[in-house]
Image 1: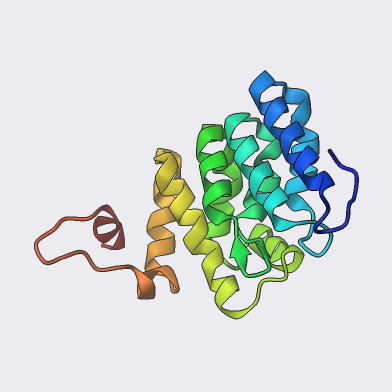
Image 2: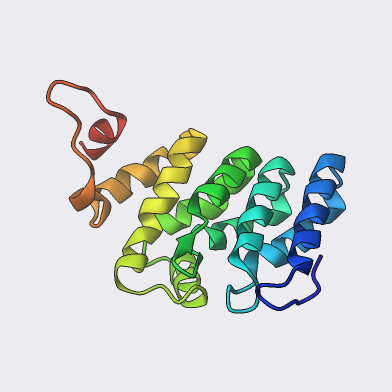
Length: 178
């Protein structure tokens, strides 16, 4: 799985087939290889492999994959993103992802700063850090994250960009903002 190939190699089809077979078997020994593929730069491999690795990890929930999946929330390759695939995998991992996501709600936390540096986030991408963490935490319905979410909704950029619900419609994020 981890053999480096030219970006547009026919052998990538074999790698995709191998990933799908490992998921079908449900072998947890595949997780380290899948996380390596997920976090490999799109300069070194076809970004489709990153996407398929994230989808495979959504079917093989494993706490060991959480750090790579969080990085994947911010990965781009040739104009594509894998946010939704990594989001699904984190949600399927369940509560094990919550402790790693909560610190990302604060853009000045050491975890946020480390992730921003590692993923080379700047400008608008940097502003996405607490937003994407909030989305996944909301998907998880993590009650232990509510205090941190409340605080995050009081700070920009979440406070300034919270979508407004239609008039007269109660919304969870509106309640949080109060």
